[in-house]
Length: 133
Image: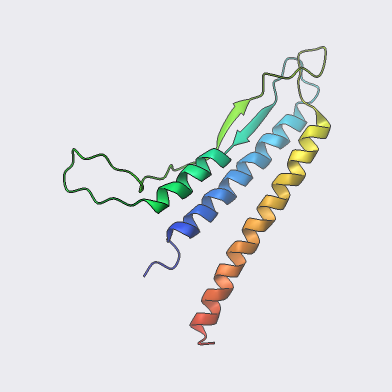
């Protein structure tokens, strides 16, 4: 029985890692707000997370090594960082918008807190089961 390594626990863990990566990216953007020609970056993980969730629904068993594997491969890191080149905010080539970064930080904090509550709920359920209650 997999208590701590089941697929849902791994998705929550990867979501927390992605939220942490997003926080670092936003902090880096804010730190470089006055750096000329700095291009803001963003962390993308929602599409990869959706793919991983969809991958859980389909499981396959390979009877030959030449068969394609689907549904069981999960990326080690779901988050990727991309530059936002489509905006121009300052005349010095820097495109960091502090209001946008602060709103992204608030959204990321809400997402992170939701994931932490989900982890706490899972461990509270396990605690209840272990105590026989």
